[in-house]
Image (tube, rainbow, N blue to C red; front, side, top):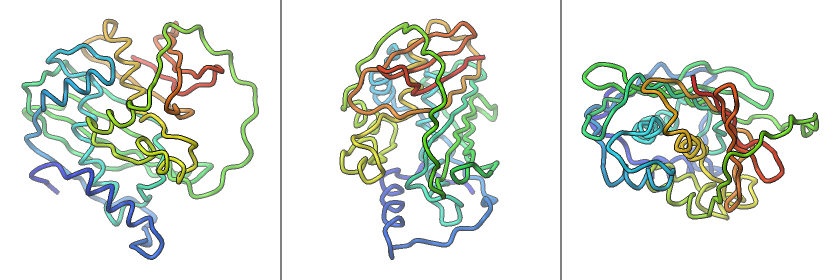
Length: 276
C-alpha cells in the first residue's frame, strides 16, 4: 500500500487512545500479523526540525543526518501500521524494548527518502508477545537505512521482581541531567506524542509515577556522545531496560567491547548498546 504523504501522528494517537477505552472500539485482534507493507515516497528533511532534533538530543548542528533521525522521519508510517485494526497488539500499552539501526552510508538534509514499513517475527514472551516493526529508508531506489524496533505487548501479569544480583555498573564517562522538558521537546520533533512521555496524568494511567523519557531519545543522546567515534556505515543495537523518569540524572559509560550503557544514580541500567 502506498501513501502519498505521511499520516498525522496526532490523529493516530487519538484513535488509539479512543480504541483503548471500554466500549469505544475495542476490537478482537487476530492471532497473526497482517500481510501489509506501507510506503511513503518523496519524504524530505525539514531543516528546522532537524536543528531542533539535534539540539534536544545533543548532536552538532550540521546538514549530515544522525543515524537516528530517519527513525523519526519514518515513524508516522510505522505508527499507521501499528494502529491498523488488524495489527495483533494494541498500540496503547506497548513497551519499546529494543531497537537496531543500520546505516549503510552517510546521508544529508538535501536528500529525498522513500520509506517502507512492515511488521514481522511475532513471537511469544514471558509477559505477552513481541513483534518487530521494520522501517526501511531508500534514496533513488537504494536502501541507505534500516531500523528494527521491537515492541512488547503485555498480556499477562509479570511474576515477582527479578532479585538476582546485577553486575556492577561501569565507571561513568559522563553524567547528564534530564529535565522534564526533554519529554515534550522530543515529542514535538519526533511526532511521538505518547502521553507517558509528556503528561504526569498520562504516565500515571500506565503505572509510572511521573513522565518518562522516550527510549529513542536515550539512544540518540548516547550516539551524540559517540558522534566523533562513529564510522560512515555501522549497526547500532540497544536494549531498553528501566525507563528514565523525568527529571533525573543518568550516567553514560563507554565499554571496552565497543558497547555503551546508561545507568541511574543507583547503578541500575536504563539502556545497553553496541556499535559494530
